[in-house]
Structures are given as structure tokens and as C-alpha cells.
Image (cartoon, rainbow, N blue to C red; front, side, top):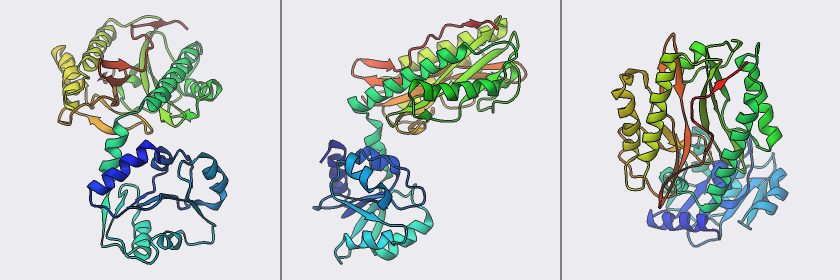
Length: 364
């Protein structure tokens, strides 16, 4: 049994669970090594205390599951089967006590099917168990995340060569998404964002047909998936010349980014990272223009635990990976965001993203 499954079994015993059912495909991959998109079909990893783990997959995925999964007991179901009857058979006619499920992943319809097939005394959420496990990355996970960061930075470097006269935001998005596949990534880890000029004042703006103009600030926010793990980077550039006011904003955001990274140490709270970055921006007089948290957890999902907002009193631990991405957004003028992926080591924070953050002027 692999380390992740052993940890989960320990958590199951400590939490008084008699059985546990994992159904989120990402978590099945995390625990077994088998990656799948089952669409509407049932996929589940079942652990019964004292028993052998069971992986239940659609029949069309059987060969792939046997090839990739660390769990060797694999049951399959066809499109005409009721997978919940298969699940029921795993309990050998006995009524389980407390069964752990992923409540965030279960729909009401699926829960009703499960409760009818497996009439447990109680169902309890196991989201916190998986969240705490995923928050501390293993050396293998860090290796994958470093690779994802390297790939996205190569995409951005190549993408910058396409910033030319007459190009639009959405054309740059298309080029970046193409480059992701070309350099070997699985694809984007979220919708690629390229914003220019006044559109950079929209923290979650939607790229459109606006043509890049001299004097613009140009913001790129993008990430890729590689070997199941995500990267996420934001860099902001000046086009032809840097507006003095935007240059001032840029330097403020850069100082906030560096302050947030410096505060990212084991034993500190996640909230202290937000406050460290926010203090810099507020001291410069731009506090009202920084309207989002400073970052979020990163791993198999682009957004996962923790949420780095100022009120989060949870403590940073070695192995955590999260973004630090302060920003200032001034309507009618423009905005700046600078984002890095930060890994917490015993020696302190280490950035997985290494691309220069010095204010760079691009020429059309």
C-alpha cells in the first residue's frame, strides 16, 4: 500500500470511520496513481477497515486502471450495470456503521443512490482528511510542480515574442494555449488571461478583441497542468513606455509580492502573508485598490486549500505550496498583479516560479 493510502487509513481509524469512499477523480489519482475522467460514470475508491482497498471503474477504463493503479483489486461495471449494487456487494451483506464520503463532490442524486445501496448508520464528510494530506506536498509532487512552473514560464517567454503591432488580447491567448501543448504541458490549468491597457484594472477580466497599444500595461495570468499538477503565474509588462503612475504602482506591487513571500514561513499564519503584502500597498496609499486575498493553495487543483486571506489563522507547514499574488487595480488607468508559486521548506520559502519580476518594457 502506498504512503498516501496508509495515511488515509490511519485517518479513517482515528476518525471512527468503518469505511470510506473516495469519488473525486483527482483524489482517486492522488491515492492510486490512476488518472481518469469518468464523465457521468461511477468511479470510486472504497476502503473498508481491515479490508483490502477496492477500486471501482467503468469497464472501458479497466485496462488503464490495471496498468496504472497501485490498488490491485479492481472491479468494473458496464454502462448497463448499476455501480451501486457493485458497491453494495463489497460489504458482503453487512451493514456498515459510519462511512466517510466527499460531500463537496457528491451530488444529492448520487448520495441518495449510495444511501439506498449502502444503508450506513451515518455518513460523514472526509474532505478535511484529504485537504490536510494534499496541503503537504511530497518530494515527487514538488518535482512535478517545478516542471509545471518551468513549462509555463517557457510558454510565457515564447508568447512574449508574439506581442507585435496589431495583435489583440484574444490572439495572444490563442497563441499561449497553443504553446502549452507544444512545450509538452497537458493543457491550461485555468482560462488563460491576457489583459491590456484599462482592462488590466479588472482582476478577473475577460480577454477580448482590444488591440495592444503603445503605453499600455499588459498583464499575463496563465498556468499549465503537467503530470497532474498545476502552475500559476502572473507577470505584468509595459508596452513601448512605462506610464510614470503605473510604474509607481508596479514597484509597489513588486514590494508587496516580495514582502508576502518573505512572510511565508513555517509556523506563521496564512493570514500573516496577506497582511504583510497588504501593509505595503496600504502604506503607499493604494489599499482600496487591492480587493482580493493575496493567494491560494496550489497543487492538483489551481485553487485548493489554503485560502490566504487576512483572517486565516491556520498555520503554515513545511511542504505547503501556495501563490502570492498582490495587485493594484485603478479603474480607467490600469492595474498590476505579480504572482509567484511559493513552496515552504525547512530553510524558508522557495519560489517555484523564477521568471524575472523587474519592470520590463516590450516593443511592438
